[in-house]
Image 1 (cartoon, rainbow, N blue to C red):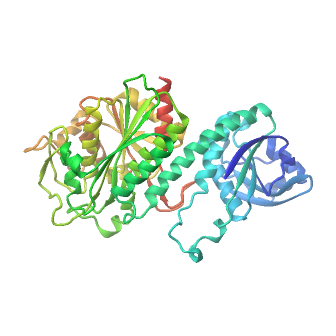
Image 2: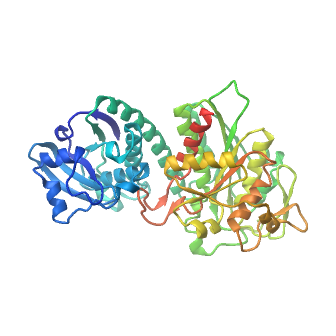
Image 3: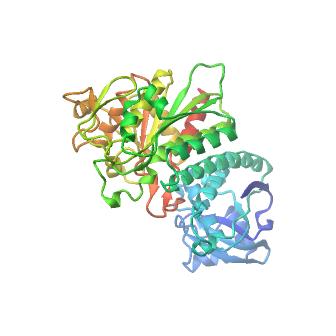
Length: 504
């Protein structure tokens, strides 16, 4: 889909369908919507008066064109309450409008610059948000469906979207915003594709292959360490998780050098469990249904590098992805086994379903050994975080207030909300082992915190932040601009964080 910014009279913009918007409770449309209402002879005002449209968030209504309006049809989208409107609401409105347009089987769409002016957003931010919402909202993953099983309403794709403003300067700013929004949303959708692939297709080797393909396209250096390399590097925690799988592990390293003169490099670490059965601590069958998504952190790290390379911030970043399956065959790691991480520290394994933290421990050790700082990891780590925060926010854990604040700000800009969780030293008592340096689970309490503090144990004091995306990485039903399946969460947060760190 081609997206462009256009300066001109919105009522005179020729297209198959035109998207305009209204805040909840507005009785008489103003601005661009008012101009369209006037061209339609007050059709939108009449819709409101009849009680057929209230402006509720996500609400849509369709009207025929005609009169003095150049567009063939009009789609009115509700923005919700004005006092709660922000860039995320603009993304949601764009998605709602574009999905409605797709259901009408149109190819060319025009849209008012949602959120600019009365919405409080500057034209660049408004256009970026609209482009993100449009691309994210139209996402689908149906490559394995036969033609007869595919959704007929999505067979005709929207090929062009013109975001219309009546000011040339605003259009230029909107053009910049569109470019950023496209990069962010396309990268997030690419991560969704990875997450949605079935585990018999996307095993560790295939994940490494796709990471290589992305890096080759963007001119990034990629190193994929195989099992013998992993053994040589003494990554005993990663190897332990892999013991029960017939598919060998992969340790993927992607390097972006935006500031070659600097010796500083940040690390983005993504958990890459391409399927999680729980190992010998076997999950119930219904809990395995979405465990192909246990590599969502890896998908986010890989595709964030794609977006970062296009935006070219002056910063060095390395993505590190430990990848393996967690399976329960006769060679699988046992409850009670003790293994050593790359840094030589001994881990007592008391639950083989707490495997993500094991592979991340070796990845963090690798980042520390290379002098990378700060380290930010993303992982579908704990069910406890889902219990605490549901699918609304990811858990943020960090022992570094400055880094935590940067991650929070980046997530807020991205519309990927987080909530900072406690990391008090008192919780470390739960993961002390009687016979090893640390154990991989505590008791039934504060599981999200103890999981994060297990990771912190391997940072050796390096500034570090952990995002537990277990609740936000995969949706079991349509939610906002997400369809059922992978969300690509974390991609846009990492990109915004990289841009912020590059500014100093």
